[in-house]
Length: 99
Image (cartoon, rainbow, N blue to C red; front, side, top):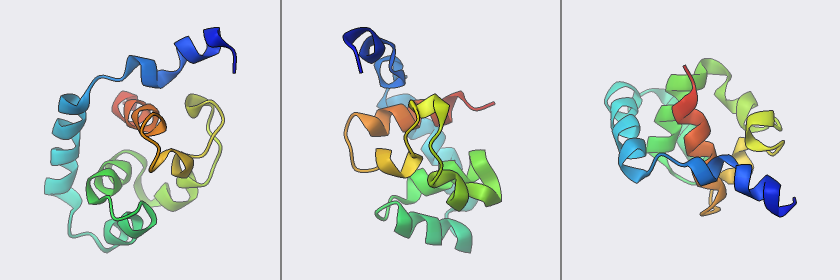
């Protein structure tokens, strides 16, 4: 990745933790008890909030989605973003931009 590519990376346009927390809270209110979300959370290192947002945005195909290299994430898997302090911002911003 060149310096120009890095400057264009989605994490550099992260809307912020406050925006993420608001979206996460909505997801938690709707989906925190859904069995699929609880299973998804285990794959996401017990991040129930992230699991709720992914389920809200992606739906029942969330498990498959996590394992696909996505152009919006610069051709890395969403699962590869979890646990990385920079890449998690990339994933969060991508999720916040879904219609």
